[in-house]
Image (cartoon, rainbow, N blue to C red; front, side, top):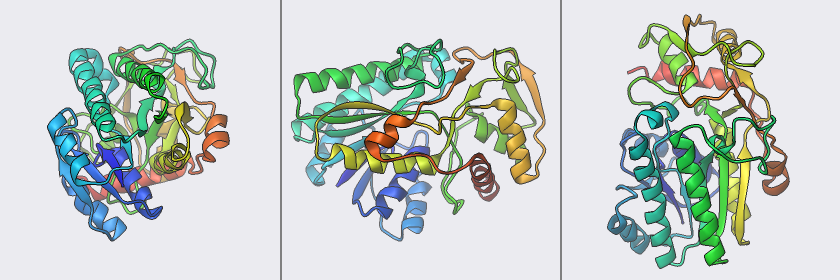
Length: 332
């Protein structure tokens, strides 16, 4: 059985669908601070199965130990953690406390129960901003915001863990920018308050929740001055976890792997792609740069294909269509 921490969140919920489709049994642990309990019922509707879930904070060692005692856990996919770059700049201590504590507690319990297969939800924010693009897994590491540093520190913790005990098998999956939603429109990104990420900001402008999109900076050294990112459909990203799970099953070690498309889109290109895919007009205003942001970041993706047998397949128009369907179906 697979334990999925933060499994009711955006990427976690989509990964649970793919786990179910691939025939894996799993249990979710989530404290629902950045997700909704309704997601559990919706996962049941999509998969046609009763979803096992536990409401708990992964920082609570007794609660996590109880899960390992009740369920026969073989491996863990670890999504639990705070994830907003901008918020991490204004509240760094909460990011370090939450993200690092979650992983420390989880790994302590895994060790005690002799479960040593782990997929960690890392991020492209661990790469230095001055790396040549596309960035590969051997590029220089170094972060521009506390969110990225928390991921960087956890990656190092996990490398040290393996160095102390070579029975561990760990995949560090460095995500680029997941967008889109499940084609059913039943699960998708559910930000609390004003969205920090581009696509939910766009969809909430379209639905009338927000008046206009704020584009942070148009003076970057990019194609049109706006930030360039590697946007990947969340379903493609979720499938990457299934490939990684199979990869770590029969080997030991620590591998960092980019999960992206290898193609960068600017903010303005995403706005235009969304307008073309949906027929909606996106009003926007240019603001100053946001602290912690970088000019461009997109992936070199050869290692994922070589090591995991995985590559992204869904195009930008599909990402926009699915994100729009999610917001249109769940505006309340």
